[in-house]
Image (cartoon, rainbow, N blue to C red; front, side, top):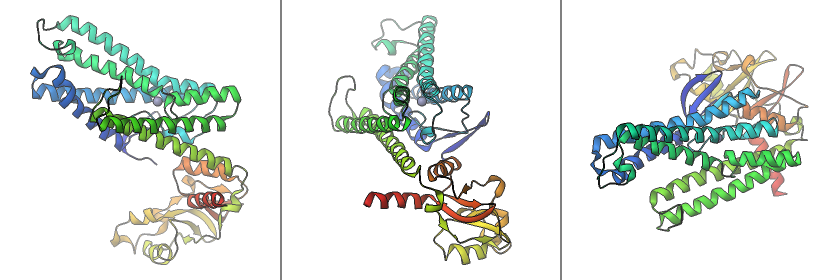
Amino acid sequence: MGSGIYLGRRRGTRLYVDWSCVLVWLLAVWHLAVVMLPWWNPSWGRVLTWALAVAGGLGLLVSVLVHEAAHARVARANGVPTQELILYPFGGVTDTLREPRSPVVEFLVAASGPLANVALGLVCLLFSQASAAVFGSAAGSPYGVVGRMHPVPALALWLGSVNLFLGAVNLLPAFPLDGGRILRASYWAGTGNLRMATRWASVLGQALGWLSVLVGLMLVFGGRLPLLGTGVVNGLWLLVGGWFVAEAARRSLQSVRLRDLLRDVPVARLMRPAPPTAQANISIRSLVLDRVMTADEEAFPVLDGGRLVGIVTVDDARRVPRYRWESATVREVMTGLDRLAVTLRDADAATALEKMTAAGVGQLPVVQDGSLVGMLRHRDLIEWLEARDAC
Ligand SMILES: [Zn+2]
């Protein structure tokens, strides 16, 4: 299950671009076309300026892709397959919920992304140098160093700097950025305690994220800082990026806590026994009227006689057009047993939660000796956690 725009599949990895990437890409193209390029050389004209801005934006997308591809390649080489890769504007935070295998692998995987950006950045800078020698520069031009250049080496210079910047930003010790993962791997290698390492890295990630939001707000309201400069655009970059990191760090901290608390709790204690079910041969209409409308459930285990054969969700029913509600059966739209994630009564709830996260579902049917004995829902886990906190 993925979110965002599906790009395609490569070596078993489904590739998505998160919607926030589109926003950041538009912001980057706009920033190039309206602020940067006219400042370099206002005589380049409107068409050339926008063409360069779009090319720069595409270069930025390729840079993020190269960064993530490096992570995926090193991960695969170390036996950690990536099933799904979602591109975020400031690097990938897709794998925070999965337990990494060893500190060394985690370190190598984390370091590969920023290193790929540094390498790409150096290649761009070298290309800029070489092409500047070929195209020559307009001597005696009134513009700055970049503005005197031909547009091609100028854009390469920009993309090179952006890649070095991307590499540097991702190396900041703010979990779940790569630098934070490197820090966590080091702490983990030193203490042997992954949970403690994740906890501290997430706390630091949240602190640095909120600091970035604060500094961004200062810049937006006219503050000026050494190195970061001033202005609404710089401020917005810091604000959005900081919020993104803080939020991701909060989520990973929450999931560590939840996993810690659920480790010794058996599924049987948190599951809902005797959940409402649906027979495989009933129509979608009767599923909606007799099940969805009367029970406060998002999903129903599907039985054929007494045997569990799948699960059907409210979303599955919603995808069936109204005129087929009478003729279509639950069996036609359900997720069958072959693709169904289930858990055992005696499994621990932390493992079940990981299974739920990996499958991208909100509940797991609980089985014992092949028959359904209950349902474990994500919201029950959250409610249990909140009730615990209230005591
Ligand atoms: Zn990364």
